[in-house]
Amino acid sequence: MVFDPYINNRRSIRLKGYDYSRAGAYFVTVCVKDREHLLGKIIDGNMVRNPAGEMVSKIWMQIPENYPEFEIDSFVVMPNHFHGIIIKSDVGVGLPN
Image (cartoon, rainbow, N blue to C red; front, side, top):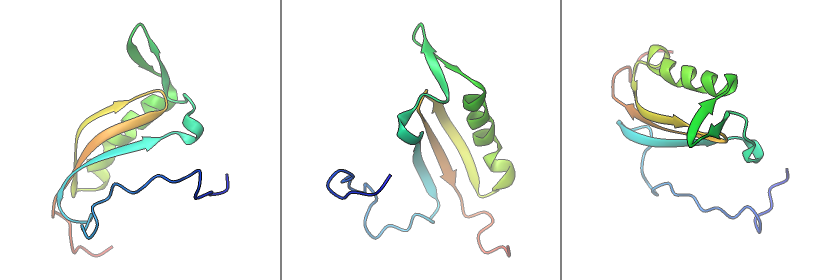
């Protein structure tokens, strides 16, 4: 898909001048390409994850194991997107790569 500024005119909700590498709690949303329902489906009002949705959940839960400066909080996997709250601390800052 080619970027068209007349169609793709979403404005950034980022706070100008804010350093997003700072410690704090961040709300994250990740959408599936073309908003396809690739992560599961809603059945009787409940989200039922398919294997891809389970993979997203598992990887989210593993974030602190791989990145010690992050904690995870609430999250939800929906059929075509994912929401989560991630908390960044100063732990690990300045460590060599």
